[in-house]
Image (cartoon, rainbow, N blue to C red):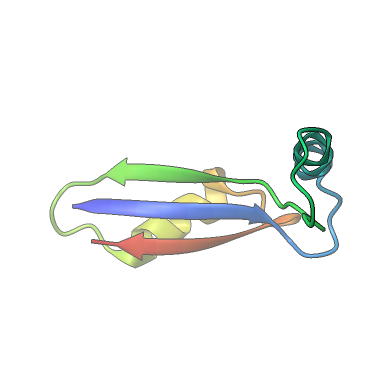
Length: 76
């Protein structure tokens, strides 16, 4: 079973990497990019029977810094 976790900085948390990407896109001539938020995707290959609750516990304990990051889980 596969799980995919999308981790992003929470709204209101400064994203210097996203700002650097936005600036670089402008320097390359891409107009109209008003903001960029950068995150990460973590893919897990889990044993059969793994639950979303288990993945959520993984996120809370290790995969996401829940003080400044939010996450979304896709199971499939």
